[in-house]
Length: 317
Image 1 (cartoon, rainbow, N blue to C red):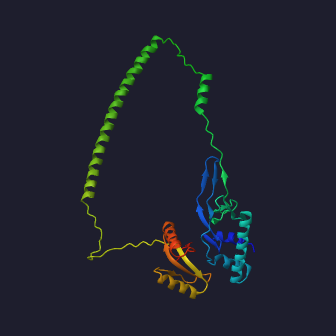
Image 2 (tube, rainbow, N blue to C red):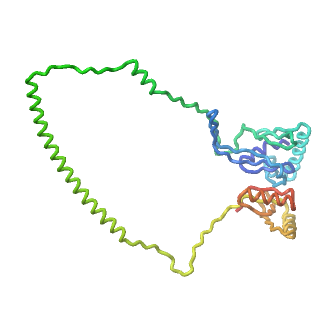
Image 3 (cartoon, rainbow, N blue to C red):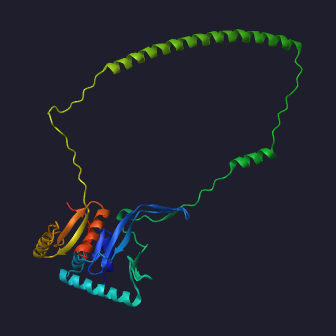
Protein backbone atom coordinates (compact mmCIF):
# COMPACT_ATOMS: atom_id res chain seq x y z
CA UNK A 1 0.00 0.00 0.00
CA UNK A 2 1.25 3.46 -0.93
CA UNK A 3 0.62 5.67 2.13
CA UNK A 4 2.11 8.90 0.70
CA UNK A 5 -1.32 9.98 -0.60
CA UNK A 6 -2.92 9.67 2.84
CA UNK A 7 -0.04 11.52 4.52
CA UNK A 8 -0.52 14.37 2.02
CA UNK A 9 -4.24 14.54 2.83
CA UNK A 10 -3.57 14.84 6.58
CA UNK A 11 -0.96 17.59 6.15
CA UNK A 12 -3.74 19.95 5.07
CA UNK A 13 -5.48 19.60 8.46
CA UNK A 14 -2.83 18.68 11.05
CA UNK A 15 0.51 20.07 12.20
CA UNK A 16 2.03 16.65 12.83
CA UNK A 17 1.55 13.35 10.95
CA UNK A 18 3.48 10.46 12.52
CA UNK A 19 4.61 7.37 10.60
CA UNK A 20 5.16 4.62 13.22
CA UNK A 21 8.76 3.34 13.55
CA UNK A 22 9.97 5.89 10.97
CA UNK A 23 9.43 9.56 11.88
CA UNK A 24 6.97 12.43 11.62
CA UNK A 25 6.19 15.15 9.08
CA UNK A 26 5.58 18.54 10.71
CA UNK A 27 4.13 21.71 9.18
CA UNK A 28 5.00 25.34 9.94
CA UNK A 29 3.16 28.38 8.55
CA UNK A 30 5.40 30.79 6.62
CA UNK A 31 4.19 34.33 5.86
CA UNK A 32 4.18 35.91 2.41
CA UNK A 33 7.65 36.69 1.05
CA UNK A 34 9.29 38.95 -1.52
CA UNK A 35 12.48 38.04 -3.40
CA UNK A 36 13.96 41.42 -4.24
CA UNK A 37 16.45 40.06 -6.77
CA UNK A 38 13.71 38.52 -8.95
CA UNK A 39 10.88 40.93 -7.95
CA UNK A 40 8.73 37.89 -7.13
CA UNK A 41 5.95 37.79 -4.51
CA UNK A 42 5.13 34.44 -2.87
CA UNK A 43 1.85 33.83 -0.93
CA UNK A 44 1.75 32.41 2.63
CA UNK A 45 2.30 28.66 2.79
CA UNK A 46 2.84 25.65 5.03
CA UNK A 47 6.46 24.48 5.11
CA UNK A 48 6.82 20.70 5.61
CA UNK A 49 9.58 19.47 7.95
CA UNK A 50 10.70 15.98 9.02
CA UNK A 51 11.68 14.75 12.50
CA UNK A 52 13.11 11.24 12.73
CA UNK A 53 12.88 11.22 16.57
CA UNK A 54 9.06 11.09 16.62
CA UNK A 55 8.25 7.43 15.94
CA UNK A 56 5.47 6.36 18.33
CA UNK A 57 2.11 5.57 16.76
CA UNK A 58 -0.48 8.20 17.71
CA UNK A 59 -3.15 6.45 15.63
CA UNK A 60 -3.83 9.42 13.33
CA UNK A 61 -2.51 7.96 10.08
CA UNK A 62 -3.76 4.43 10.76
CA UNK A 63 -7.25 5.64 11.68
CA UNK A 64 -7.42 7.77 8.51
CA UNK A 65 -6.34 4.87 6.29
CA UNK A 66 -8.82 2.54 8.01
CA UNK A 67 -11.68 4.94 7.30
CA UNK A 68 -10.68 5.61 3.69
CA UNK A 69 -9.95 1.95 2.81
CA UNK A 70 -12.78 0.60 5.02
CA UNK A 71 -10.47 -1.86 6.75
CA UNK A 72 -9.87 -2.63 10.46
CA UNK A 73 -7.52 -0.39 12.41
CA UNK A 74 -5.09 -3.25 13.08
CA UNK A 75 -4.86 -4.04 9.36
CA UNK A 76 -4.10 -0.37 8.61
CA UNK A 77 -1.28 -0.39 11.19
CA UNK A 78 0.16 -3.54 9.62
CA UNK A 79 0.03 -2.02 6.13
CA UNK A 80 1.85 1.10 7.37
CA UNK A 81 4.62 -0.98 8.95
CA UNK A 82 5.05 -2.94 5.72
CA UNK A 83 5.38 0.27 3.71
CA UNK A 84 7.89 1.64 6.26
CA UNK A 85 9.96 -1.52 5.81
CA UNK A 86 10.02 -0.86 2.04
CA UNK A 87 11.12 2.75 2.65
CA UNK A 88 13.97 1.70 4.92
CA UNK A 89 15.11 -0.94 2.44
CA UNK A 90 15.16 1.60 -0.44
CA UNK A 91 17.08 4.07 1.72
CA UNK A 92 19.75 1.46 2.43
CA UNK A 93 20.01 0.34 -1.21
CA UNK A 94 19.52 3.58 -3.17
CA UNK A 95 20.41 6.12 -0.48
CA UNK A 96 17.09 8.00 -0.81
CA UNK A 97 13.37 7.84 -1.55
CA UNK A 98 10.92 10.22 -3.22
CA UNK A 99 7.43 10.77 -1.76
CA UNK A 100 5.05 12.43 -4.27
CA UNK A 101 3.58 15.78 -3.13
CA UNK A 102 5.68 15.61 0.08
CA UNK A 103 9.40 15.66 -0.73
CA UNK A 104 12.56 13.56 -0.82
CA UNK A 105 14.48 11.75 1.93
CA UNK A 106 18.15 10.87 1.48
CA UNK A 107 21.39 10.30 3.40
CA UNK A 108 24.00 13.07 3.20
CA UNK A 109 27.79 12.67 3.29
CA UNK A 110 27.69 12.37 7.11
CA UNK A 111 25.12 9.54 6.87
CA UNK A 112 22.37 11.73 8.35
CA UNK A 113 18.83 11.50 7.02
CA UNK A 114 17.93 14.78 5.27
CA UNK A 115 14.49 15.87 4.02
CA UNK A 116 13.85 18.26 1.12
CA UNK A 117 10.18 19.37 0.84
CA UNK A 118 8.44 19.76 -2.49
CA UNK A 119 7.56 23.22 -3.82
CA UNK A 120 4.72 22.01 -6.03
CA UNK A 121 2.03 21.97 -3.35
CA UNK A 122 0.87 24.49 -0.71
CA UNK A 123 -0.79 22.84 2.30
CA UNK A 124 -2.11 26.16 3.70
CA UNK A 125 -5.83 26.12 2.85
CA UNK A 126 -6.14 29.91 3.38
CA UNK A 127 -3.82 30.42 0.39
CA UNK A 128 -5.85 28.24 -1.98
CA UNK A 129 -5.77 29.70 -5.50
CA UNK A 130 -2.87 32.09 -4.76
CA UNK A 131 0.27 31.78 -6.87
CA UNK A 132 3.58 33.59 -7.08
CA UNK A 133 3.59 36.93 -8.90
CA UNK A 134 6.45 38.72 -10.66
CA UNK A 135 6.30 42.53 -10.60
CA UNK A 136 8.46 44.39 -13.15
CA UNK A 137 10.90 46.95 -11.78
CA UNK A 138 9.69 50.56 -11.78
CA UNK A 139 11.60 52.74 -14.25
CA UNK A 140 11.82 56.38 -13.25
CA UNK A 141 12.42 59.00 -16.00
CA UNK A 142 14.52 62.09 -15.49
CA UNK A 143 12.02 64.82 -16.41
CA UNK A 144 14.31 67.58 -15.15
CA UNK A 145 17.00 66.78 -17.69
CA UNK A 146 14.45 66.67 -20.51
CA UNK A 147 13.09 70.12 -19.56
CA UNK A 148 16.58 71.62 -19.37
CA UNK A 149 17.39 70.21 -22.81
CA UNK A 150 14.14 71.69 -24.17
CA UNK A 151 14.95 75.10 -22.74
CA UNK A 152 18.38 75.04 -24.37
CA UNK A 153 16.83 74.32 -27.76
CA UNK A 154 14.12 77.03 -27.49
CA UNK A 155 15.37 80.01 -25.39
CA UNK A 156 12.91 82.84 -24.72
CA UNK A 157 14.17 86.45 -24.74
CA UNK A 158 12.08 89.41 -23.55
CA UNK A 159 12.87 92.82 -25.19
CA UNK A 160 11.19 95.92 -23.70
CA UNK A 161 9.35 98.12 -26.25
CA UNK A 162 10.29 101.83 -26.42
CA UNK A 163 7.45 104.40 -26.65
CA UNK A 164 7.38 108.21 -26.67
CA UNK A 165 4.57 109.37 -24.38
CA UNK A 166 2.86 112.68 -25.39
CA UNK A 167 2.67 115.64 -22.94
CA UNK A 168 -1.08 115.14 -22.48
CA UNK A 169 -0.48 111.67 -21.17
CA UNK A 170 1.85 113.08 -18.52
CA UNK A 171 -0.99 115.18 -16.98
CA UNK A 172 -3.31 112.19 -17.21
CA UNK A 173 -0.76 110.17 -15.33
CA UNK A 174 -0.57 112.85 -12.61
CA UNK A 175 -4.38 112.75 -12.27
CA UNK A 176 -4.40 109.00 -11.99
CA UNK A 177 -1.60 109.16 -9.42
CA UNK A 178 -3.56 111.61 -7.27
CA UNK A 179 -6.69 109.50 -7.47
CA UNK A 180 -4.67 106.44 -6.55
CA UNK A 181 -3.19 108.26 -3.55
CA UNK A 182 -6.64 109.09 -2.19
CA UNK A 183 -7.75 105.50 -2.66
CA UNK A 184 -4.63 104.26 -0.86
CA UNK A 185 -5.37 106.55 2.12
CA UNK A 186 -8.92 105.15 2.24
CA UNK A 187 -7.66 101.57 2.08
CA UNK A 188 -5.16 102.20 4.90
CA UNK A 189 -7.91 103.63 7.08
CA UNK A 190 -10.20 100.66 6.37
CA UNK A 191 -7.38 98.19 7.16
CA UNK A 192 -6.70 99.95 10.47
CA UNK A 193 -10.39 99.72 11.40
CA UNK A 194 -10.54 96.04 10.43
CA UNK A 195 -7.40 95.25 12.45
CA UNK A 196 -8.90 96.99 15.48
CA UNK A 197 -12.05 94.87 15.26
CA UNK A 198 -9.98 91.67 14.99
CA UNK A 199 -7.86 92.67 18.02
CA UNK A 200 -10.93 93.27 20.19
CA UNK A 201 -12.51 89.99 19.02
CA UNK A 202 -9.34 88.08 19.93
CA UNK A 203 -9.30 89.70 23.38
CA UNK A 204 -12.88 88.59 24.05
CA UNK A 205 -12.16 85.02 22.88
CA UNK A 206 -9.08 84.88 25.12
CA UNK A 207 -11.05 85.93 28.20
CA UNK A 208 -13.74 83.36 27.45
CA UNK A 209 -11.13 80.61 27.07
CA UNK A 210 -9.53 81.59 30.41
CA UNK A 211 -12.91 81.28 32.12
CA UNK A 212 -13.50 77.86 30.58
CA UNK A 213 -10.06 76.64 31.68
CA UNK A 214 -10.71 77.91 35.21
CA UNK A 215 -14.03 76.02 35.34
CA UNK A 216 -12.30 72.86 34.18
CA UNK A 217 -9.60 73.20 36.86
CA UNK A 218 -12.21 73.79 39.58
CA UNK A 219 -14.24 70.76 38.48
CA UNK A 220 -13.90 67.59 40.61
CA UNK A 221 -14.11 64.10 39.15
CA UNK A 222 -14.98 61.09 41.34
CA UNK A 223 -14.04 57.50 40.52
CA UNK A 224 -15.94 54.78 42.37
CA UNK A 225 -13.58 52.51 44.29
CA UNK A 226 -14.76 49.38 46.18
CA UNK A 227 -15.15 50.35 49.82
CA UNK A 228 -14.60 46.88 51.23
CA UNK A 229 -11.39 46.76 53.26
CA UNK A 230 -8.90 44.28 51.88
CA UNK A 231 -10.90 43.76 48.70
CA UNK A 232 -8.64 42.95 45.78
CA UNK A 233 -9.31 42.40 42.13
CA UNK A 234 -7.36 39.54 40.63
CA UNK A 235 -6.87 39.35 36.89
CA UNK A 236 -6.17 35.85 35.80
CA UNK A 237 -4.46 35.12 32.56
CA UNK A 238 -4.37 31.66 31.12
CA UNK A 239 -1.41 30.61 29.00
CA UNK A 240 -2.30 27.76 26.66
CA UNK A 241 0.13 24.86 26.80
CA UNK A 242 0.17 23.39 23.30
CA UNK A 243 3.42 21.38 23.52
CA UNK A 244 3.01 18.00 25.27
CA UNK A 245 5.78 15.50 26.09
CA UNK A 246 4.28 12.08 25.23
CA UNK A 247 5.40 8.98 27.12
CA UNK A 248 3.18 6.57 25.18
CA UNK A 249 -0.12 6.10 23.37
CA UNK A 250 -2.24 2.97 23.94
CA UNK A 251 -5.43 1.56 22.49
CA UNK A 252 -6.40 -0.02 25.81
CA UNK A 253 -6.96 2.02 28.95
CA UNK A 254 -5.38 -0.71 31.13
CA UNK A 255 -1.90 -0.22 29.64
CA UNK A 256 -2.17 3.58 29.86
CA UNK A 257 -3.08 3.32 33.58
CA UNK A 258 -0.19 0.91 34.17
CA UNK A 259 2.30 3.32 32.58
CA UNK A 260 1.00 6.17 34.79
CA UNK A 261 1.63 4.05 37.92
CA UNK A 262 5.16 3.15 36.76
CA UNK A 263 6.03 6.81 36.09
CA UNK A 264 4.63 7.86 39.48
CA UNK A 265 6.82 5.26 41.21
CA UNK A 266 9.84 6.74 39.40
CA UNK A 267 9.05 10.22 40.74
CA UNK A 268 7.39 11.71 37.65
CA UNK A 269 4.02 13.48 37.58
CA UNK A 270 2.37 11.96 34.50
CA UNK A 271 -0.95 12.96 32.98
CA UNK A 272 -3.27 10.46 31.32
CA UNK A 273 -5.59 12.04 28.79
CA UNK A 274 -9.06 10.77 28.07
CA UNK A 275 -9.67 8.70 24.98
CA UNK A 276 -9.61 10.90 21.86
CA UNK A 277 -11.71 10.54 18.72
CA UNK A 278 -9.30 7.86 17.47
CA UNK A 279 -9.96 5.62 20.50
CA UNK A 280 -6.45 5.83 21.98
CA UNK A 281 -5.23 6.92 25.44
CA UNK A 282 -2.16 9.24 25.45
CA UNK A 283 0.06 9.44 28.57
CA UNK A 284 2.06 12.66 29.03
CA UNK A 285 5.14 13.54 31.08
CA UNK A 286 3.87 17.13 31.10
CA UNK A 287 2.68 20.08 29.01
CA UNK A 288 4.56 23.27 28.10
CA UNK A 289 3.70 26.70 26.70
CA UNK A 290 6.61 27.03 24.25
CA UNK A 291 8.98 24.88 22.22
CA UNK A 292 12.09 25.84 24.23
CA UNK A 293 10.73 24.39 27.49
CA UNK A 294 9.36 21.33 25.71
CA UNK A 295 12.67 20.61 23.93
CA UNK A 296 14.67 20.97 27.18
CA UNK A 297 12.32 18.54 28.94
CA UNK A 298 12.51 16.11 25.99
CA UNK A 299 16.32 16.10 26.05
CA UNK A 300 16.31 15.36 29.78
CA UNK A 301 13.76 12.52 29.42
CA UNK A 302 15.76 10.98 26.55
CA UNK A 303 18.86 10.82 28.76
CA UNK A 304 17.22 9.75 32.03
CA UNK A 305 14.30 7.50 31.14
CA UNK A 306 12.77 7.12 27.67
CA UNK A 307 14.65 7.73 24.38
CA UNK A 308 11.37 7.14 22.47
CA UNK A 309 9.51 10.12 24.06
CA UNK A 310 8.30 12.75 21.61
CA UNK A 311 6.55 16.14 21.48
CA UNK A 312 2.89 16.41 20.45
CA UNK A 313 1.74 19.87 19.26
CA UNK A 314 -1.97 20.18 19.98
CA UNK A 315 -4.40 22.44 21.86
CA UNK A 316 -6.04 20.38 24.62
CA UNK A 317 -9.12 21.77 26.30
